[in-house]
Length: 258
Length: 251
Image 1: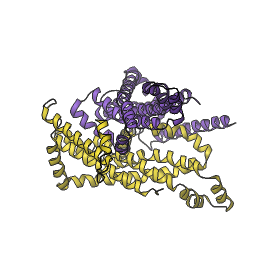
Image 2: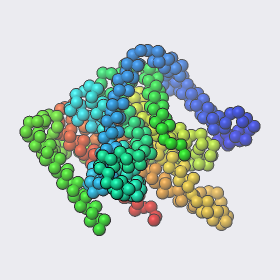
Image 3: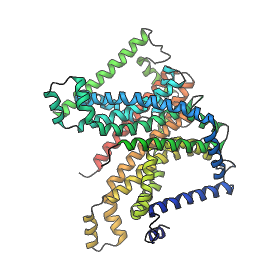
Image 4: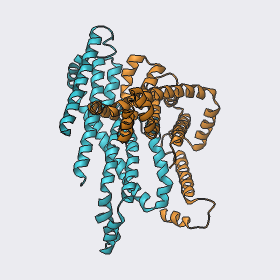
């Protein structure tokens, strides 16, 4: 199949780029396989619903007001958690970079916590903040904090020592150093941090909602699952993925094009 | 000199950790924070002993690790050949690479209800979700490694009139191996992290399940001990793999 596709490449159809054609064919093939499995009866009925059912569920989801209530809750949790994690992570990352001894002392703990799955901190967060929205915000913040910290600290190492010496020779105060030297020099790595942080904050919030909540898109997804409303669950997962990838693309647009 | 400075920093970090633990202990003993919310650090050794006695330590650790390795093996069995195909057929590579990049940013772990529906609440679900997370770095690193093979090496092979398969096995794959290994290392970590997360979410399997269980049984010190254990396991696993990679990679 691969060979035919490459040969296709040389066909004089310029109005349709070969890459686009491969992707369109792939999507078509995936849809056909899905539909085939759905209609074959190999799996329990309803486990893989036909695409038409998922499409119908998707339309229903888009026109139901309830969806947007849950979306608003999740969006607020993600925004607040991401904001807190981002600001705290940048501050801590700058501190680790500006004070190398402190940075080296903290590195093992930050690395260890950054690697560990954040969702296992949910019980602690729920004990501290209850099972409501605050616990989801806290988990989002916790998720965003570590990649942002690591990335900012790495960005600090990349700042030219000349810039820092310039700042010192002007006898800038600590706050001035941060505002006039570090933050402008970190611009690129902060944008990368935002991408990383937003992605994990979304995951953290949604998983927390799945585990224990009474509202939000994560709750809605697991509620569909528990009630065995499978087409609705697939449609909602699709909705969540579109939003998550869309948010990532939007933040990616911020980065200066080279 | 640097090693000594590094050692001093690590020592300072340990002192800092001890200070935080002492502060927590003080705040809890003084009644400012309830021990039912934050377990006093002094209760952790006993909690670990409890976990060990009840079989919540070694067996869950082994179960989680076995799943992480199984997931990575599964991901490699699919991902390395796929990375190879994406390298061999540049059109496919250009078509799919951005998709894989986007999937990297997408919350893949959220697909787990889908696998719960298909496979039920069992090891098939946890391993497949882990493999899904592990799959992407393997494909991307395999393709990147193959693309990064210096053309000089390939030309040397051709000047020795190596057949195509021999060229692949003797020159191209060995040259791409370090990048593929990096992919495998990332894959193992992603698999481990995602599997622990799923275990916690669906109350099934190894280490993640222990945290969930201790929370619902309201065994607060044991829950904290299990969380500390997961953090330590992640950190040790991460640094072991990094060491293995630097030791193995020819300088």
